[in-house]
Length: 307
Ligand code: AR6
Ligand code: MG
Image 1: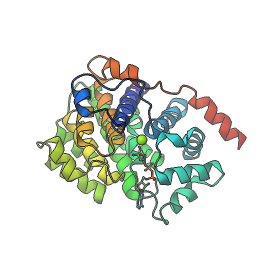
Image 2 (image 1 turned 120 degrees about the vertical axis):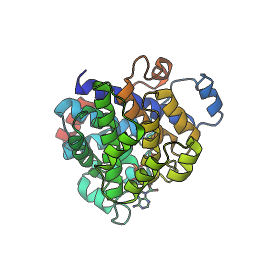
Image 3 (image 1 turned 45 degrees about the vertical axis):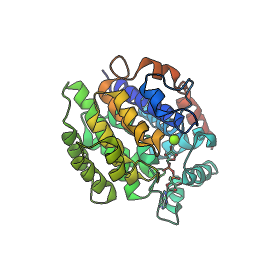
Image 4 (image 1 turned 30 degrees about the horizontal axis):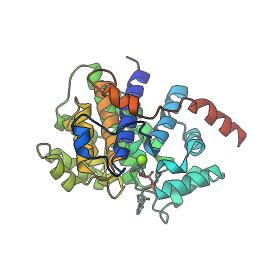
């Protein structure tokens, strides 16, 4: 089991969660069908969560770490507007394509506040899995990956939280020791500073015994598309269902809201622990996900050189 194997399993978990979660915005596809073992017919197109995660994974495959300029170039190169990007992300990625420095574009977003959207968190679980066994490196690398598009500290901390959870999940898989839900969230909290994201994870830790509906009511379900309205619930799901990928995705679907993103985050963390094979992601779900792009590294390098 290499770092890249863990990373790749987490990417499968993220992208299947994203693609299946996005199906629940399609009229007529109901929760009951999924629970009955009859999910929507494929292929399930993945969305911006997966497209951006693939850019991060290409960085790790090619270089073992995040170079922010190169990551910005990859994000801009692979940006397909119809993949459901946030409104701020659309503006920012267009600007970067036009030659604006990513740091200027990210800093200017939302009247100079920077984005506190959930986009830095939605794409980062595979980076955490890659750094299984080294939570501090996962946190630092997540920070770097987030800054390229999200200048607001709450969005950056959302990415740190998800990456540390995925690193811990991957490490638990390697050591064959499942952490208690509270232990997993404590490891995450140890890498955060005070703020709304931190407060959300503290609340999630107190709610470990409650129903999905109650957790989503208290923590948010991503309907505001903000980091602190998304990550606490997604990590509550991952912590409480770490050994059961289908149950984690069911919980995200049941909660509603920004389902593709909560399922991408929870799915990316859980698959770092379960793997993507038997006992992890159902084979039928993997087969129905739109295939992942395969040409990221080369195209992006060519685009960078041509600027
Ligand atoms: N003040 C007010 N609203 C904000 C702020 C802010 N500082 N920052 C973000 N928002 P964005 P993302 C709101 O556009 O984070 C897709 O559906 C604002 O409404 O930076 O990459 C994905 O699947 C803004 O449009 O993009 C994810 O669910 C929104 O948060 C999500 O979008 C998202 O921030 C990822 O979005
Ligand atoms: Mg999306």
